[in-house]
Image 1 (tube, rainbow, N blue to C red):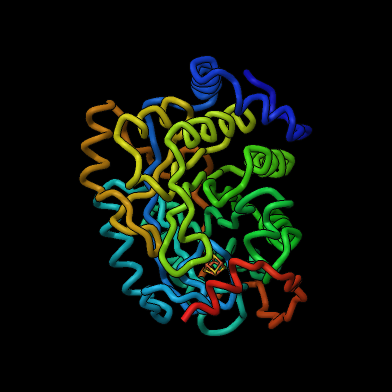
Image 2: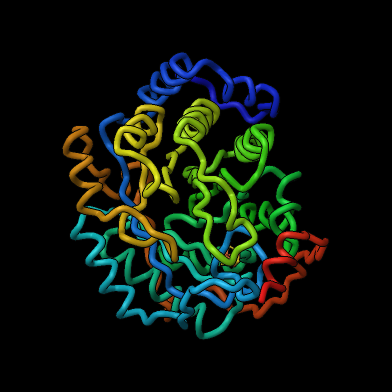
Length: 360
Ligand code: SF4
């Protein structure tokens, strides 16, 4: 069994990333088989429970209010709407529902209470529940855990160095602080990033090193290929080549052997053969549904056809960790603290973000 290391250097990871492809694939696939069933892939459904109008300036994101994109914003969905979508996802083979809200950070109050109710509802459907709601405090993480949350997603996005070129409204340390807050509970951590934002291979390796240093390493690492959306600062970025995606997946698999590696955004640009190579390289999760928050994604029927051709089966829920218990709101022992944490606001100047904001 390969050893879990937390002392990876960026240079070591770059060396892995640059290994001749056949050797890289062989190594990654061997490690993959030691820790996972290679014929099983988890299918997750991503639901945008609150879309658009976000105050942050993430250069890749069409939901940032300051950029001129055609995302139609909507208020928080109702618990009933979420339940209906979760049931639909379950019937088409999803074992996990990930709920995303375009918030900078969670604020205590009726909307968060609704999200907690959504978590309870989906956990009771015997599906893994994940949330991505922005930055959260220790108390909010504990309340989510009490409701039955299985995973919390908070991506590092890229290396600490390149982060400053993409986002100016919060710092890398805020990301790490939220992950640390989640780690104080029994909720698992989902954290990964995006390639194709203009970063160097060193930045990619730097991000993998930052994730690998976390102890324990994240249970789930999504690898996204940028979907360049018109109106965002990164609208002109070239689509990443499939080879880069395969290398990134294989490198992540080698450095974080036990992690569930997620082939996330950008699959519409990948051939079926390319996706199959990613599965061979160690990807063992995908997002299903025709939309990934706001960007296109392959239809679930196409995914199931591909699974059939490759002899893959969707992973059952709670294979990696037992189902959390749900504590009803009336029995909660946790108070709403109404905290106002001081998350950073570096506000440094990113020329392309400013240009996209000021575009007529
Ligand atoms: S990525 Fe999240 S935090 Fe950043 S602008 Fe989009 S919705 Fe807001």
